[in-house]
Length: 269
Image (cartoon, rainbow, N blue to C red):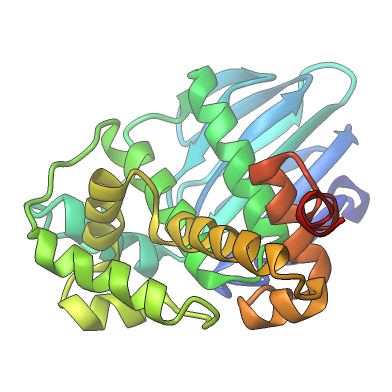
């Protein structure tokens, strides 16, 4: 494989067990090979001849390709060039996650049943996940999205998990009490003795958001109060645990359609 075929290759800045690769308008060919990780991704442009073990397919823009650990496969442009994005996720991590929502499985991991998925919604979910893993440094947000995506990818349905409102309230209270802290999924799991999968699923069912999304919304709500009081943007960003001022401004505008400065000027003149 010519190195120019891969336009970008990197580890997720938040999750060291995830690797990202993309190619933009490449015409390089990939001979038969395999990976130790679970690999899955989407075709963004063009088409390619894809062989997975003894099965042959034609990929095209919008489809999702799934590849199991150790499966020999090859992918070559059908005509002209093509663009794609792929994620490579540690097999042990996937296997441990599967044991949370596939309780009957006793193998190290459950393989993909299909090699190609044409669901438009899956393409959109992957794009959101990929862009997040590419730049996000917060493990809580990154791993939460990855767990949600992988659960849908392997089950195709939402699993109902029993829990008590009391346990979830403890997580919610921890977020509120430590709004400026860099909390992790492990912090929440240890608090209520729940697995990451069950915690995220149950929290979202009860609060309508993942723990990370809930944390961000609460930070923005608190920021609105502090902006009305005239506090500086840099102080607020630091106080509420944002990576920097630009991170604060970006998230604030996503939720209010105003920059923090514009919002503050409405109340302080």
